[in-house]
Image (tube, rainbow, N blue to C red; front, side, top):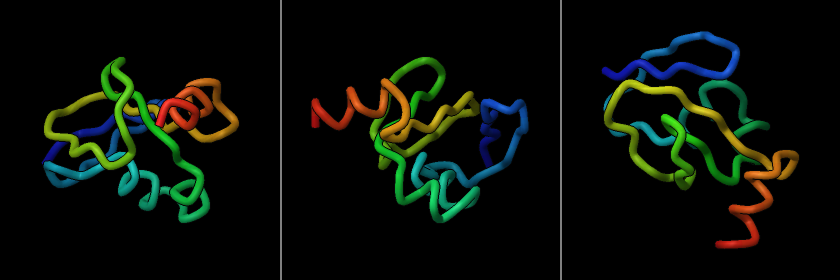
Length: 74
């Protein structure tokens, strides 16, 4: 199990290899439908990137500058 810290400070445990998209689904299906990319421990990653260590996760949607950047560069 890995511990993922979300922007609100909450910490959730997930299986090793869980993706940012799966984390989003565990929060809300609506959020999951809108996730374009994420930041894991300060590094921008794709929504399907397996997470293998504890860390901080920020999910980006079209409403975030980083989400738009990921969309235009994909």
